[in-house]
Structure formats: structure tokens, C-alpha cells
Image 1: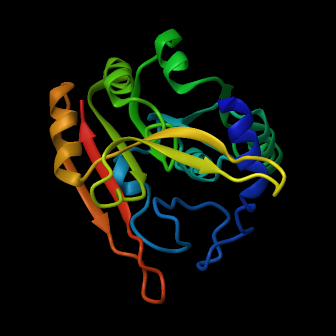
Image 2: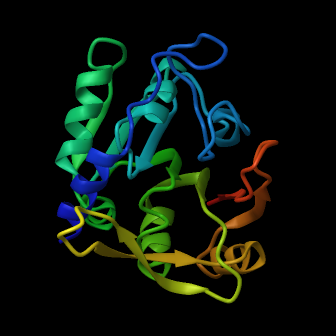
Length: 220
């Protein structure tokens, strides 16, 4: 069911633009808005680093990590997403892509990483009680975990239902997501051995948009 859900989502999500507003072929975007918010500097990695993205989708952010000289490893449950990533970036940068559930990959993996990140990805859609210890195990000492997602709806915290629409004749697909306010995220991270945890909501850019982006960063 979940693999089908993310394949369906992949078909609905538009392709990343050929270039951003600065004319760059690759770029990093934590938010749901183009040309908005901080970039890859949040991860503090560069040439020679090893970086893992959980829920890499079509690989846009991961491709930018690769241009910085890092080993760029991506995991996604959706074969459709990974095919799109390979088609878009195979001639541009080298990506190491794995089709797997994020928690299963972390459990089987024996490598360690300088940074793990998720942009509206697997960290949002996996029980933190299971995922965070697995991430901590794979991060090198001082390694960074950073992730972004939508802020929670007031009063709706913990495990929530998230819906992926299909045709008018089909019921939407349902996946679980985990929503918390920033102070609760920092508390949860400390409970699982992370340090220097920060969580903040980045305001939406000027205009009619009202939903900001929750950005969380911590170290192992």
C-alpha cells in the first residue's frame, strides 16, 4: 500500500525546474516554496563527506549535495521516484540510489554518515520512536540530522492521517505522518541521544501563502 501511495504521489508532483532563479542547475531547498529559505549549509558538509537522504524522491536536493563533492546516497520507497531521479541526474552527477523503506535501509546498512536529511520525506512519515534510534546509529559522532516538513495543525499532534488523492472514482490513499510543535521535536530528539537540537518555523515568503516550513536540526 505505501509503495503504491508514493508512486501515485510521484505522478502528481511536478518536475523540478531546469534552473532556479539564479540560473543554477542544482540547488537545495528545504521549503515547499521555490527560491526560499536556507540551503545545504544547514548540513555543514562538503567535499569528501558522506550524506544520506531519507525519502529522496526525484533527487533534486541530493544532486546538489553531489555537486559539493560529497558521496550522495538516497533512499526512497517509490520505484517511480527513483526512475525519475536517475533519468534527470544520471548525466549530471553520481547518485547512489536505493529502493527501500527508510527504516529497513538503516537497519541493514553498515555505513556511517556525516549527515542525514529529509525534506518533506521519510522523517515525516515514519514513527520517530523507531526511526530516530536507527538514524543515530548510522551517524558519525557530531554528525548532523536535519529535516523539514509542514508545521502541525494546532491541536493535532503525534501520528496523523495524510491523504494522497487519486481519481474521482477512487478513494484517496492514506499514509501516516508524525506532527509535533518545535519544542516537542527538540525534546524528542534529546530523548534519543541527539544534542544541540533546534526547531523553528520558517515563515512563508511574501504573498498569499500562509503555511511556513518546520525546519529541525540536531547532532549525534
